[in-house]
Length: 544
Image (cartoon, rainbow, N blue to C red; front, side, top):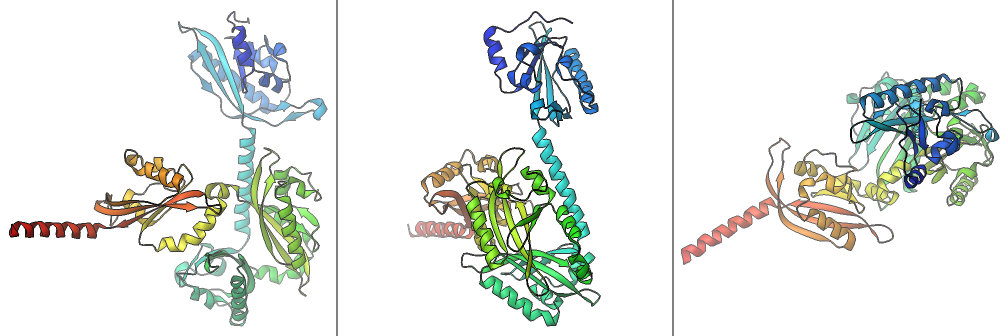
C-alpha cells in the first residue's frame, strides 16, 4: 500500500477539512489522504492521526458482528467504485461508534448511509475515491418507534371489542366501521344509516338518561361526551358499553357532527371487582396504547407513565417527578393551570402543548386528555391521561385554519358554487368541493401548491390573480371564463362558462392566510345573451 502522490492544494485542504459533512478522501489503495474534522471527531482521532491510515485501520477495533458485516459491505462498495469507476451507494447499515470513557464508555448504536465516488483524471484514470457518509440514526429510530406503535395499535384493535362510528348531525347520516358485525353481530346494511338506528339499540331504561347527558354536553359546548349504557346486540341480548364521542361545532356553537368509539364492557362488568384489584392488568393495557399515557392520584400526583413517555422524553424510567421539565417553557403555565383546574373540578380536560423529543431536541405538539375514574360511590379514585402527537396535523392545516374548516365544512358541501381553498403564499390546496373534479379531473389536490396542481394555467392570469389577492387582501373577479367541464364525469368534457371569484381569508390578526376561489356556472346565461344578441342583430337587419 502507498499514499498517492496527488495532493490537494493548501487552500483546498482547509476548505475540505472544514466541510460540515462526514467525508474522506482516499487513495486508490484506500489510504486516507484527507478527512473532515467532523469525521475525525467521530472516530476519535485528530486529522493528523487519521491521514495516512488504511481506512479499515482507522475505525476502532471491536467484536461487534454488525460492525464486521458493515466493514465487509464497505469493502465491496469501495471495490465496485474502483473497478467500475462509478459511484456506489451502500445499503443503509448499522455501525456502532465508541463512547468516550468520560461519558461511560462502550459503543453507541448508529445507522449510516454511505456513497463512494471515484474521481478520475482527464485520461480516465482513478485519482481518488471520495467517501461520503451520512448519519441516519434519528430517521431509523423514528421509523422503529413508528413501527412499534403501529404494532401496538394493531394489537390493541384486535384485543379490545370496539366499534367506531360517525354521525353527521346536520344531514342525519350515521356510519359504522367493519367491527360492528364482529362485536355486536350486525351487518352495516341491517341498520338504518340515521340516528334512529342508534336510538333503537339503546336499552329503553337507559335511553332518557343518555339523551339528557348528550343534550347537556352539547348545550355547554363540550368537545367530548362519554356515557355508559346497555346496547342491544343482533341476538337480542343487551351488553354494557362505554361510548365516547368527539363533537365539532359551528361558529354559533351548534353541533355539526360527532365521531367516536363504543367499547363492549360486558367482560369487564362481569369481572369488575377483580379488575379493580389488578393494577398490573390496567398498566399492561396502558403499555399497549400507541400514545404516551399515565396515571395520577385524585390530588394530581403522577403515579405512573408508560414506556412511550420515557422513550420519547428521555426521562429515567420509573421517574414521575419533574415531568414539567420536558414541556416547552412557553406552555408550562397553561398546562399546569388546566391540570389544577381539572383536579379542582373533577371534570375531564384536554390541552395542547409542546413536549421535547430527547433524541432530536425538537419540540412537537401533543394533545393531552385527562379522564377522571370513579368508584361505585362516585368518588374520584384515579386520573388516566393520554398524550397524542398532533404536530403533523398542526403543520398541515394550522390550528386556526382547522377551526375555520370545521365551521365551514357543512356550508361548503352544500354550496352551489365549486370551491377551492388555498393556504399561504404558495397557495397550498386544503379543500376542494366535488365540482372541481369535473372542471380539472381527478388530481391529488390536497397538500399540493397551485403551480403544481394547474401547470396548464401558468401562462394565464390565474397565478397572478392568486398572488394579488393574497398580497393585497382584496376580492378579485373574472367573469364568463370558458372552461372544459366534465358535467357527467363520463370522460366527455364540454365547453362551459363560469364567473370566478378570488376571496381572501383572514386570520384572527386580520392577516391574509389563504384564498377561497369560487366558480359559479353561467353557461345558460351566456347562451341566452348570445341568442338575444342574434335576435337583436336579425331585427336590426330587417328594420334597415
